[in-house]
Image (cartoon, rainbow, N blue to C red; front, side, top):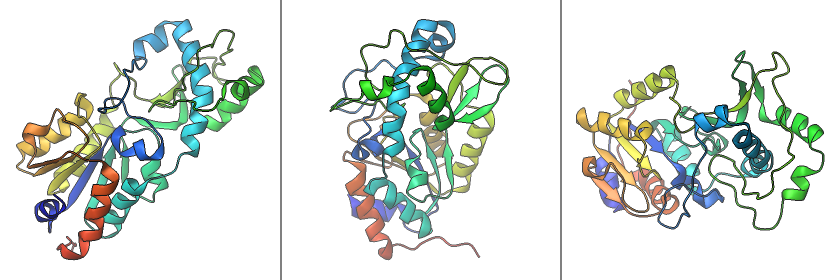
Length: 278
């Protein structure tokens, strides 16, 4: 399969689209992999409309974001960063909020759904770091995070830790206007900012091929780029465990883990004609 990957991408400018499956080897579970348990991620409507849901989210996130912040890139992330340095990958669009591509050294990354590291105010639009909010939440809930952390703590792909007892957790509001605070993450039921989508389409349009890694393409936010590339006649290659919603549009599908396949692809770059400008 790696030989076929090399043949398809040889001499082409490649844009990568990644999903939660690329981060599983870093200890972050995915949403829809073959071995993933059923998940019911919070929707935007639940977050803004129900204070009980919002309390539950912030209590769990207060613990879970620390685990995500300490996670480190795996061979799949590092392979894509190496492919960028070698001139094969010209840009990357990720549906993940874990910042692992940036940590791996990738330079041109569009965080389609935002990142766990920032928080926004829905009232005045102020942005603060997640670390700053953590200090305020810890002051309002002394000892909560330490008491919640146990061996085998599970953290979802949106930095939401699995904690049963969240009663009594105190939320905090925006210090500037008193408005509702929300992670700077695109929730289910919420639209990706138009300028971010436009920038992602520009990456796809400037490339000659699309490489999908670790995404089931179940939601339209990722699938639209596959459809766009295919409609423009650009070959689409998908590396993912299990079937995806874009398989019928792909020139090649590889049912395997991202780390091994992407590492082998990066190792094979010496055999490829790398696109260069000028």
